[in-house]
Image (cartoon, rainbow, N blue to C red; front, side, top):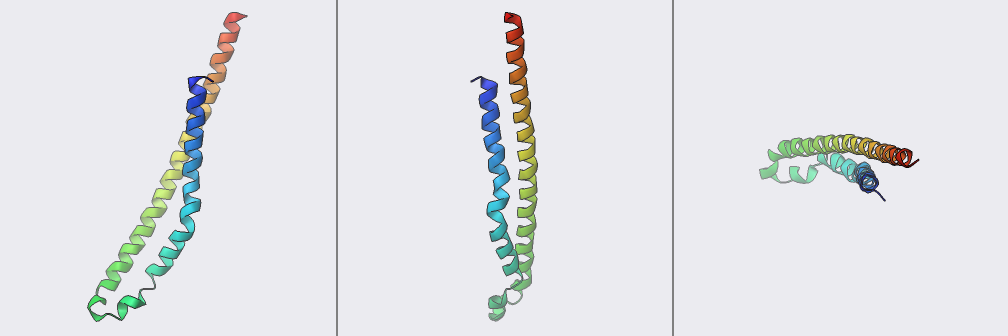
Length: 103
């Protein structure tokens, strides 16, 4: 197996892994987002009542950042997949050129 073929295979595996991140984080993220609006336990503690809004904002920000990371990882996976495909094609072209030189 050529080095390009190995690199392409490795990149394809990495891209597949990145694409799967969103599937693993979707449910926990939804649960976290739902709980960010349900902070009744903090309301029972008078000293934390003022912090409830800040905690809600912080949790909302974390949800947004996580969604942005998921989008970024998806874009990275797409790019890595395209580079992997280019390596596969280049490997085929190099093999064809080598074959043409022999024949």
